[in-house]
Image 1 (tube, one colour):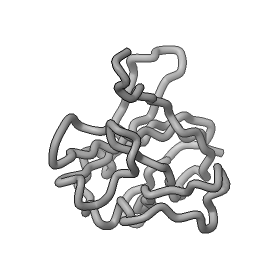
Image 2 (cartoon, rainbow, N blue to C red; image 1 turned 180 degrees about the vertical axis):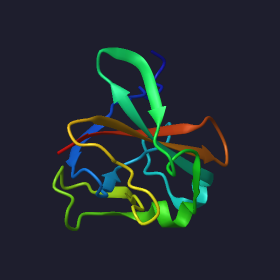
Image 3 (cartoon, one colour; image 1 turned 30 degrees about the horizontal axis):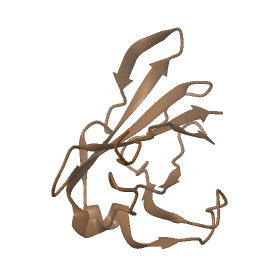
Length: 137
């Protein structure tokens, strides 16, 4: 390598109640490892998909939670935070979103696996994908 940062992509796992919501937290960084700030992103959207673990290509969009636009300033924080419920490390998070269950539940079935995928369009560069895998009880 020529000193370029190494991209790391991984899903963040969690558990939620069927019919409920979830508050999703992450630390999202740019291609150089600096925390992403609201001014760095011009658009954001999310989708929730039900998954089938026996077929890795299966993704069924959850009604009411597909390609939903979000206000970037409601999603990304200007600084890293270390408050509750963040318990991953002492560095903190800069990404926070609570899924809206008022119109339609994001996780309608129990005992199922869901993928929550956020797509962030930076002012410069490629789309940034942030993913959460949620199992429901």
